[in-house]
Length: 296
Image 1 (spheres, helix red, strand yellow):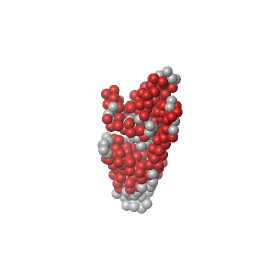
Image 2: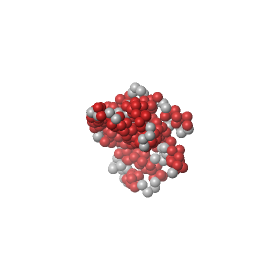
Image 3: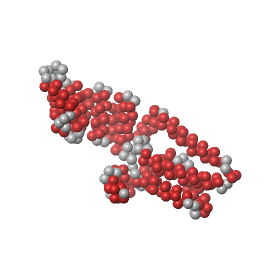
Image 4: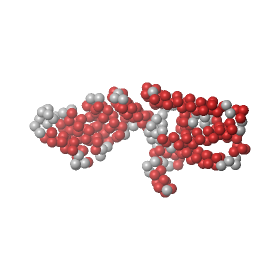
């Protein structure tokens, strides 16, 4: 499997290791950047609240654990996942790609739980601390679940993360604005969704973000704005079928027959069997163009 894994890392996954480049200096620079280390520290404490105790307990128990089988097995689970966590940068950010961090969080929690258990096992006088340890892990976990369940608090946290400090890179902020746009759309908050997409497009005007912005503007009835965005999009991505098709539809709604015809023909150049642009052209060829509207 190693050749296939290496090929996947060098192609599909290379942006997950360093956004600016896949060579070793970029990968190491991204891994050991100060803000990334700070984020990982916060993240590990979030996923495993008692992780801070692990180094001290390891030093305390080192003589008695040196020959234990668990001393081999658990670190063997821990080191790869935590090491991978150092080098992997989720493209969609911490708020969406939680699965990237889960394995490392479980590995840290397993090691910490084992160390805590062995410490209490060796001191029957302090066995009562087990209840405090359980509550010390449970309380912040429940608080975090409650926080994420509260929509307004969750959105406020993402907005605070974007605003800083520390100030995040433009691409990361764009992805988070895009994430907020998707959330607002799911809640039928069309005005807020369009505003989030507009901010994302200002920071990183990728074809996908521009398309989502145009769709949000169309959904809230701002067809002229949607048409303007789609015109820019087809210039940036002339092979994007969805952009041409949506431009044709929006232009038809605006009774802009010239732009509708151009966009429909652009879509058919990419996919000649697509029914929607073909139907629009047939309507435009009838008397009066768009339902009797004057042509322009």
